[in-house]
Image 1 (cartoon, rainbow, N blue to C red):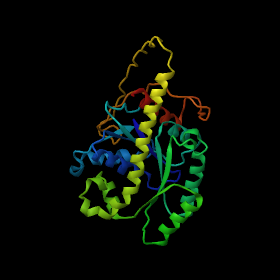
Image 2: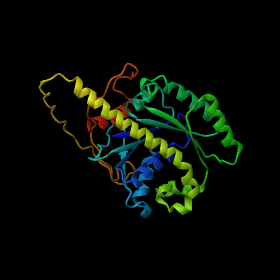
Image 3: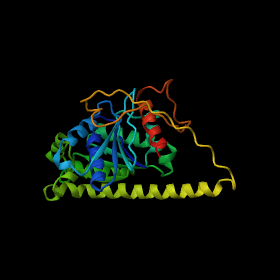
Length: 300
């Protein structure tokens, strides 16, 4: 299962716009994609509810993943790609949990000094984590709400180049994104001729995402082959662990979180890391991320 996480510590940076569009792109490519919303505001799940009622989005379904302290959506069989919309302020154990499972991280960055400083601090912390430092989890930035004809776009490129940040390009500020959010749609659901300029800005971003996913898939194949070669010859296969019993959590009909999704208690083993230290009971965002990604791995 391929996973991309959209991360920026600062609120209002365009994380949900990026996350919904990445999920919409996957859906238009015929991939079985799930959009996971770990943000308390759950903006992405509200977008999914509107999408279910949008005729233009028919034929490109995106499955929602609701995460709260009481329950978590169990992924349907066949999900191959996951997009995670994360909350602002992600750091320390919360950030480490995402990196443990993500193949790549996309960081939306607006032009303001506060946004750039926040993104730089997050990028530096990411590179202290082994998966990012070793290149197993890729990281890149995307400029948000920029006009390529203005100095702001040039300054963003210069800032990224001077700091040696991987920068994929910028998405301009346009009413097309506003209308898509309101309608539960993406640019990829619209007639290409109407959003040609905007789709052109997505090309380098999508090319990087596709390449990173291909590299992750190859790495998985190599890792599995290495594991088979190092396994003791003639070893008896381990007894299968008893299947966890899933208890259905009560759903409240008609809410943005529960409409059209299934919920159940999260089970499954979670990897441990000395970098991850959470409070008793794994409360808060770190606990929700842990439960969500624990289900990723337990489901295959």
